[in-house]
Each structure stands twice: as C-alpha cells, then as structure tokens.
Image (cartoon, rainbow, N blue to C red; front, side):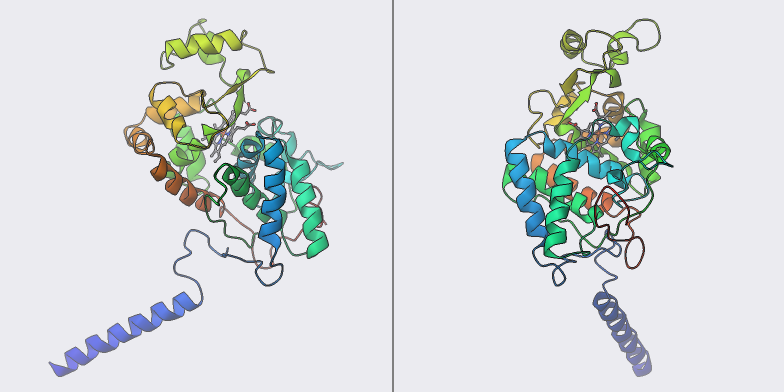
Length: 334
Ligand code: HEM
C-alpha cells in the first residue's frame, strides 16, 4: 500500500512539473493565439501600441465611418492567407492584388495605415509588422467610442509577400451564402459556428451596397418576388432607397438605427427579420445558430464573446518567428 501512495504522489509531482514547464514556455493559456503574445513589442518598440492608438483615434475622431472599414479590412486580411497584411499590398505588374477583388473594392482607410507605419518606422525601424498594425487598428478604431480597449490583441504577426485577387474572391464569404456555406467558410479558417454568429455582429456598424441584397427585394427566386424571410415593412423601406435591382452605388446602414454605434442591436434587428444580407438572415435558419443570436442580445455578453472570437480570428494562419518579413511599407513587399 505505501508504495502505491508513493507512486501516486510521484505522478502528481510530475504532473505539476509538466504544467510548470508548459506554462514557462507559454504553451498553456494561449491556445487561442498560437505563437502570438501579449505586448510582443514591449522591449523592441515600447511605444508601438500607443502610437497606433493615438493616430487611429485622431483619424476616427474626424471620420466616424473608419471603424467599420478597419474591422472589415482585418477580417478580409485574416480570411486570405491568414492575418498577414496581404490585403494591404498593391497589385504588381505580374499580379492583381486582393485589394482589387470585388469584396475589397469598398475598403478604405489604407492611408491611415500608411501614416501609422511611417511613424513606427521613424520610431523603431523594421520592428512592427503591417499585419499587427491592422489587427491593432481594427481594435482601436472600434474602441474609440468607448475610450477604452474593447478586446485584447496579441501581437507578433509577420507580413506575407503574396496577395492575389483570385484568393480574396474564393476565401471571403459571399453575402449570398446560405447557412451551410457560411459555416464551411468559417470552418475552413478553423473558426466555429459560434465564431460565425458572434463575428457577424461586426455588422452592427457600417453600410452595405444595394446590389448585395437587392435580389431579396426584387427578384428573390427569379420571379420578380421578395425574400419571404425579410420583414415586409423593412423591405419597403429598403426599396425606397435601393430603387433598382442593379443599383451598385447607394449604400444603406446594416444595423438600421445605429450604424455608427458598436452594440448588440444587430442581433435585435436580425431577430426581427431585418438582417440586410441573405448571409445575415441565414443565421436564423439553423437552430443552434439562432439560439446563439438570442444569447447575444445581451450587450455585455456580446462584447465579451466578440473579443474572444476576434482573438481567434486574429490568430488565423499567422506568420510568426522567422516566417514572412517586416515590411518597410505596408503596400509593397520589401
Ligand atoms: C459571415 C460572413 C460575412 C459576409 C457574407 C459579409 C458580407 C459583407 C458585405 C457584403 C458587406 C457590404 C460591403 C459593401 O457593400 O461595401 C459587409 C460589410 C461589413 N462587414 Fe461583413 N460579412 C461577413 C462577416 C463579417 C465579419 C466577420 C466582420 C468583422 C468581424 C464583418 C464586418 C463588416 C463591416 C464592419 C462592414 C461595413 C463596412 C463599411 O461600412 O464599409 N463582416 N460585409
């Protein structure tokens, strides 16, 4: 018997030892961030995060649509070759870049990223990646409304050297997707159904062009009909603004009533069948997903979940260590 007790004690001790070693090397507790770290630039560029925040806040103060642009830009970056800043690259003589793909043509704010990069290169040249700048700018721009950071951004991403229009088209989910395609698109990036529903809450800010949803108003099943899952009163309001099936210039708020405010109102609108895109409405077509929608009506709950899902999205296929490079300018490779 005593030898059994001894063996158990020794097993417990070795378990403690394994956990201690794992914690020391950082392999436990960062399962969402992989090789990314908190305060990656603390010693090499201690002012990095402050510089990003200051310049971002200065620009958002005078341009309230920027948070929507940056949040979407970060999402589109992460879904194509991972969060590697590839969305920031310009086309070359040989290749059309991600920027030129239809879903990216309404992105803006690249000039702000360039200004931040310029300042960082002055302060600590060759240290801070464009991929990290984008992840921080997405967080800081949304956080401006609250005057505090809304989620933690781990850093240590490095920049990719490839950007292809075709890859943006094939990896960024379409607003015409049904539930199964949306779920698959997120699963392809290692993200769950829960992440899909939570991150769709990004549509609480910003606008959408009519042509991404006008089929729901004018020609849903090819017979000149309206999407029966769309709230009819809301549909008439939309029709008053998007007058034709082909209007590709008018934009409408995705979260009617509060398009500049980051809040959980998107889920309230969604639950009243006022999701703008088919991809929004699709979240109500699955039992598990619509349960999550109802839970996210609670704003504090939404904020917590959004932060956690952003952390997972921000870690998708990141380049770390000696992979990739630290670009000198965000729009061209070194
Ligand atoms: C689930 C699949 C998604 C689809 C199909 C989708 C689709 C779209 C479309 C079509 C637009 C309108 C673009 C335009 O007309 O200019 C849009 C806007 C936007 N999306 Fe998504 N999106 C998805 C997920 C996300 C995620 C995960 C985020 C961020 C976490 C996000 C953030 C935004 C924001 C902030 C805007 C507004 C952009 C602006 O005002 O310019 N979306 N999305």
